[in-house]
Length: 270
Length: 272
Image (cartoon, rainbow over all chains, first blue to last red; front, side):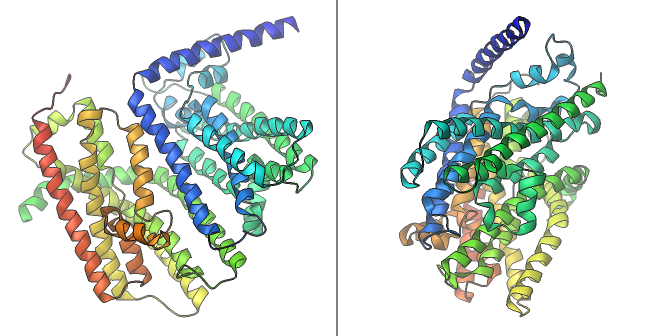
């Protein structure tokens, strides 16, 4: 037990050091970072405008009012942003780290390769999504008749936590493919884009599609299912338990594939 | 003209081969992006079933579906990487190598990209177009394909690509000042996507705003070709819109020359 605490303590310490280092790098390109963040904010603002145009003509979308849609939308941004913040470097694995042979350096480090890779990048762009997500939730919560209790707040935190790992799991599995194919960024992109489906109620999609986003690429559990529990539909066991289960399964598969991949990794070039 | 073609044909060929090399990557990307079209498709389907009305601000359901997919297709085919390529060369200094060669700087980029676009168009154009036409036939029961609208659409699409190219080259020159373009590129894509009607048809905008947006160059990128394809414009409007596109193309070609001539004197290349 004591050893375990010592180990986690060391990991957090390392993480802090890496974040500090990354922030320094960022300060070099301040203007670039700021315009990027404004771009992210604007993208979400445009989506909001898009939804408001739709709702200016119809009272509700298959039983979901404008406020409820905003709540689900805002919820979907939280796990996405947190994953983006901490695990963004997985993209680089699929796009170029393995292809260029840069993965070698992680093998020489005295921590696990997965930890070494993810800790290297602290993607501050994600704060744009995080801020918008929280803003959407704050705006919609007074209008959607939410039961704010201690238990629900706890469940909210739990579901955001696990939903984050659904994103990470999908990225982890697909970018590990690069250990065999050298490049898999586009595969990751294809699967990752499915997350956009989670922003809207799955009831608007047809049967086949809602099956896919519930059970195969389970992004519906990152937003719609947990959010609709808080909106008073569905039960905690399926909506939030499902999120946790999917996250655990995806991460387990992801870590397994990753370890397999690392052991069959061959460096590229000289 | 013949001389120009002879000089720049190798660039087109190279671009074509480059795109062919990366076609598998490209197909995965397209799959990822097409998903977004399907989200919009289902969203609008739900809007039409929830609203109960036959039309939404003048668009019927199948107009909207065709709009989603054709605007996506137009965006893909008229996409230009000019800004990024120019910016990158300015940043790493390899632009110096281009300047010592007896070729027009922007033509080399243009012809290379034409080769790449040809490859892209071969992959996405036919299947998507066929899909949309089959959908239209299934939804309305009449064969709505009109060869004249289609040909005018192709013309408008070509103009749209050229405007996009020159606009992006102008924008790419901002790398002379900014050095890094990642952030502002994100911002630009977001603004241009919205103003060009890539998110919603400009007809849905409040009247005053919609009128202004129709005149801006961004409408020429996506909105005008798509509206022509949809058959929403009558003949005078089509002629007017094409005229507007030609005007913006001339404008950006001219602007590009001015910026280039002004910037090239201030350029300094580090290393080589």
